[in-house]
Image (tube, rainbow, N blue to C red):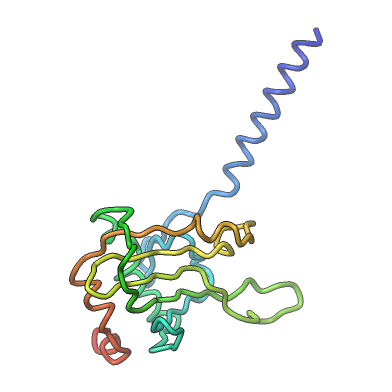
Length: 180
């Protein structure tokens, strides 16, 4: 009888864990009927997104806010087109040209009326004379994981589209505004 009770308890625990695991699933993708949206992976679609192009010294070359940043991100970094090329490209020996840093507003906590600051979610590095792109996911973008040791594990390089990477290396804020 004790064995049946143990088996029943294990089955109930397994059932509860299975049901709870579904609670963390992301919401289905927006249809896009009410504005630009799509699969943004680690990004929280309910928070404002910002994008900054930086040189390798960290100097900001230009920034995009909210709707512009989301449209630019979906056009060049959403992954559906970019990942058709070779994955896990070796970037050793390549010279970094620029970076695109994606940030989002922090979660509004009790007693706050607006976000206190933005936090880095993704960083894309482009290289001179190469179509390689390195994507690094910030450890803070992974829910419940705020550990520095994750940073090296949350990056990979892939072969981007030649036309897109050439544009991304050379584009200015004026180019982005003209394209919109």
